[in-house]
Length: 187
Length: 216
Image (tube, rainbow over all chains, first blue to last red):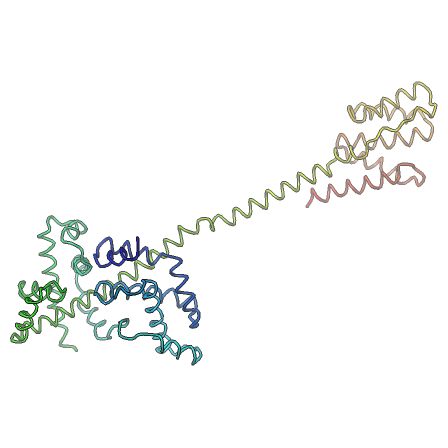
């Protein structure tokens, strides 16, 4: 798949998205290039693997949400995210790197395009709401959010009709909203 | 939450509304506190689902990584076997090389040279028996051993005796009777003036080499 096709597949969601993400993630050359870039900023091997996964997740979300501007290459974008993630990691965990490296990183990272860490309250809310729901609901909502069509949801979840898939989706969304309202009182 | 509200909010959040519909909906939100609250809840709901998706993707990435590691390096998994096989082949080849260079047969061929003895003027019977023994050493070593032992028993002259001892050692080497061969060689080596003494010493060393290789 070409880069434009990969982006388009991620935007389409569903199976094409998964295929595109797999292709990007398992592209050894891309991984190696990104790694070589990050080595300059003292990023060790054991941190890189985790960082690269996190970057793929951010890239996926930003492409789906329309935050990715198709001006540069995907590799450059991925590297930008990695650099930001590494910079954040260095700041948060106060890892030992020279001031010069930290300054270089700070100068080159762009802060506004990468949301990597979620609000702690939101994570607690996740445990109290979505995670409390049955697997079927969670799966249907996830598929819906990933732009799977109702036909695809019907097939994946072994439902009798698309109408049933739509109904389950609304019911689950409603249930999730109720759980959010119920647990909002704690925050 | 009303289904109609959910549908509208969903369209609004997904950017599926036309500009006019969008303006109209935003106007409606301003005047409807319930819709405002529902929009916020829906925003949070989608955020929560997104976190779940991210966690799910993280799991998938780890899975893909593991699958890739288990499938791709198949050649690497076979590398130790390939290396072991190469070593085995090398050992076999070197053994064959050593075998061809240092086997009893090879040593025999290296040392077996027919020495002309007719000028010595031995008796006809002795000459025939001796000559036959030497000639047979290569083609029929067992027969040669019998004939050469016969020569020794007939108290030949020193020269024939020394040659017979040497060829007996070689004939025994040819039939892989290394123990007997060594006895003859020891006998030759013990005789300082024996004309085949140096050859016997060399042959004994070569035989020792073969055994060292085989035992290692």
